[in-house]
Amino acid sequence: MNKDLITINNLSKVYDNGFNALKSVDLNIKEGEIIAMLGPNGAGKTTMISIICGIVKPSSGKITVDGYDIIKDYRETRSRIGLVPQEISLEQFETVFNNVSYSRGLYGKGPNPRHIEKILKDFSLWDKKNLRLNQLSGGMKRRVMIAKALSHEPSILFLDEPTAGVDVELRKDMWKVVESLRKTGVTIILTTHYIEEAEAIADRVAVIDKGEIIVVDNKVDLLKKMGHKKLTIELQEKINIIPEELKSYNLTKSIDGMSLIYNYNLQAERTGITTMLQDLKNVGLKMRDLKTEQNNLEKIFVSLVKENNEN
Amino acid sequence: MKINFYALKAIYFHEMDRFRRTLIQSLLSPVLSTSLYFIVFGSVIGDYVDKIDGISYGSYIVPGLLMLTLLTQSISNTSFGIFFPKFNGTIYEILAAPISSIEIVIAYVGAGATKTLLVGVVIFLTSLFFADVNVKYPLLMIFLLILVAFTFALFGFLIGILSKNFEQMSIIPTIVITPMVFLGGSLYSLDMLPSFWQTVTYFNPVVYLINGLRFAFYGVSDFNIWISISTMFLFLIICITIVSVILKKGYNIKN
Image 1 (cartoon, chains in turn purple, yellow):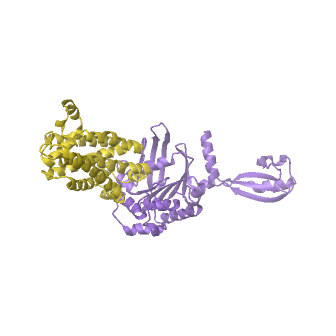
Image 2: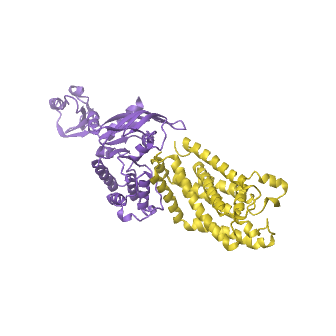
Image 3: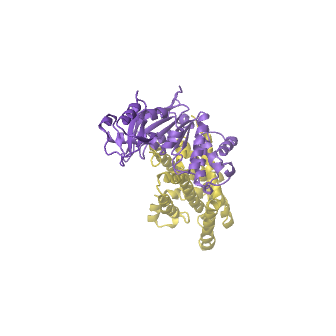
């Protein structure tokens, strides 16, 4: 079991305008994992990242990174962290190479042109090293942002909505980069709106809403736990009402009366599919086709946030 | 105490790079405007003005014009240096870096003061084309130039931190510093003013700076040199105190 690299205890943040962005958040992040933070706009994801990185002051609570306190031992914690913020913020008139080298120095590391060269090559930026930032496309600038965050060889990388507004190709490229970083042992914390992104690359998922963490779980377990399946039975003939004998299965009828929908839990001891299909046959309904669907993270996320709003 | 030398160096050279990229704007425009002052006030009008304290008018105004450049340049260089990352969002990187507030101030103020001194040297050399300048106390002159460059670079840092937009950033140099320099005896001796206005001028701190520099140049001043040096140090201490309080509270940078 990997050790906890980042521990967040009782973290709260109230902004000057009274907005309560985080409410007593507790979270432990393990070394070498990829954790995705999912949440609607204003949920508190960016605030949490900004506090850990030292950009925003917490109102209360304690955070440690590799055993060091983020306020008392800020030099130790910050030198281990790389941050890619949501917005593309770059010195537009400086070259790619100088921009990335500047970040390395800022984080307390001596010049290492070979390392900068390696990063730029990894991100297909080497041939653009002498171009000014204002000569690059949006996607290329996004790559420079990540290259800057990795310039000082951090062991933790925060990616705040790394693929917001980028094309599919670049998004897939980013996922590859994240995967290769994982292999080098870098712990990655990413926030995203794209649930498919979390589904594709994260080990664990934390769902945040209104400054609170609603659930943190292993992605696979979360899918299993929350993953109800849906069985759609297409009928050969239209029905107007569901026969009395099938009431116990809580079936729902489609509007056109040509199919029945059965919801079941994969984790339950018995799914009830066999007996339901037997009873279907007994009442004389003939099937044309069967189709099953599993809830994905998106549906789980929506239902969790909805549930949280109702409570 | 641990110091992040690499970060200090990174910020310092990053700022100096900007100076290099904008060399024409950084160097040529102050040289041009100061040359115009020398031509109009020193060469043209100066011929019709009597010597002041035994010094020709063209030479008399050199320290004042040098001080005008130093003050405006040190303020604008440093205020722009720290305001620009706030404006374009790159400040996030400085805030998230393992660097203390003091180190941030030292790097920006150091770079701002260096740029100012470079401009100052060029202005000084330019003045040699227009007036007879024989510096009586060169070491004192260098000391005062460095002190003023750093003090007002710190003041510029303060303005850059407090400003929320470009207008706020330019307002203090335009409506406070420039009038203070012109009304602070940069182009005349206080003896030439009626006694009431002389008294008013004593409340203008820039008067002491210009006279201090004039003393270093020609050994003449309206005040004792120690009054000038004490005024500079007092202003330096005030700036350090305000900057320390602001950085501690994170005002306008962190929340």
